[in-house]
Image 1: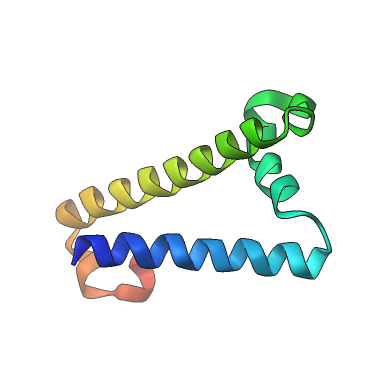
Image 2 (image 1 turned 45 degrees about the vertical axis):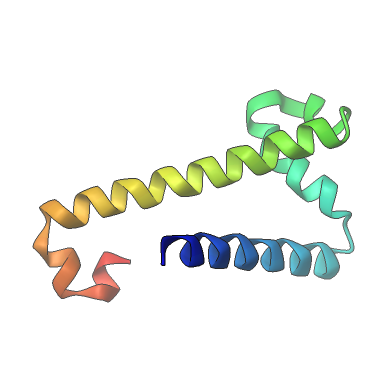
Length: 88
């Protein structure tokens, strides 16, 4: 079940990034490099696929960390279980 959730998250994020690339008429690599821009500055746009991979890793890492914080918080705060909209 957990593998299915991870697969769905990766697929959904990939679809969103692909749609954003199509909508903005921007190469997908450049969009993912933008995610590495926070760590590397403007150098993120000059190193090609290496910084695109770093951007993807940072993106999924931050997403995973947010999910972990929510799960740990939900175990301590019953209101997050009772009210799904408030809990996110």
